[in-house]
Amino acid sequence: MTPQRAETAVRVRDLTKRYGRTPVVYGLDLDIAYGEVFALLGPNGAGKTTTVEILEGHRSRDGGSVSVLGEDPARAGRAWRGRIGIVSQQARDAADLTVREVVGHFAKTYPRPRDPEAVIEQVGLGEHARKRVGRLSGGQRRRVDVALGIVGDPELLFLDEPTTGFDPEARARFWELIRSLAAGGTTILLTTHYLDEVEALAHRVAVVDRGRVKALGEPRTLGGRAEAAAVVSWRENGREMRRETADPDRLVAELLRLAVHNSGRVEGLSVHRPSLEDIYLRMIEDADVTGRASA
Image 1 (cartoon, one colour):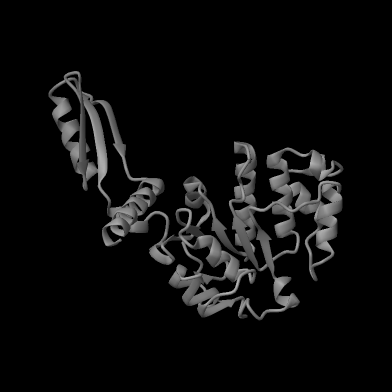
Image 2 (cartoon, rainbow, N blue to C red):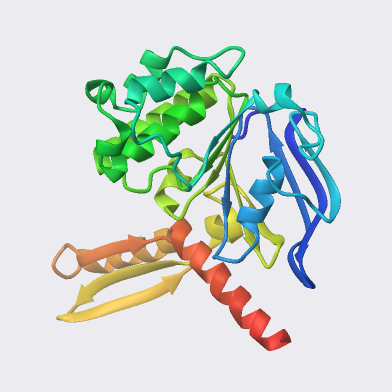
């Protein structure tokens, strides 16, 4: 599923960042391929926001090497910045401008911008193009942030909680936009608390905890998810039955075989395989237990 290109858009080795004597990022390694949608997950305080800010060139580092689109963000100039797009949690303040004015203005700051009108339509704000940003709803203002992040036609797009405040229809449209950008070769680094968003969009995902990458892989295999035990539930003689098994197909077949000699059906039969959220929460809980034990 991961795009097969040898080059890396982002390469991080032994990244370190401290605030005072407290290490926030501690020996982090990361590789993101060109054209990849890469999700970065972790609890609050895990170091993911600091890592992203270093990659964006907005925060200094204390150690390690970082290459983003072939340059060190700490020393990269204006031309490099024109190759990246950022949708941060902090909304841009343009309350007195219309949507058309603010997107058009930002487009002029890039060497090869996308058509502002097309971008406004893509983020679902076509009918609000003449409305002042300050009069938009929270979800609509978030769409303006997305428009400003992509109007420069970036090679690398940073998305920090991009769909906060979106209704289900807007989220679905946004997901299609991200898929189309990735299909066109845009590399995307996504941070989000919506695990279904990661499942729908990411080629790979890294879980960061205490400043290091604790797990890395595709959403369907992360943390041994593909081999994790499933829970089979059914009703038998009015009782709720539940069994955890690594081979749910075999158990279901056995239940159906037994049912042939009974009612011919298995009441309330269901199979629950661990979701990405299940695996992620288990990792975080295990990390908390390990952290407390070593403290």
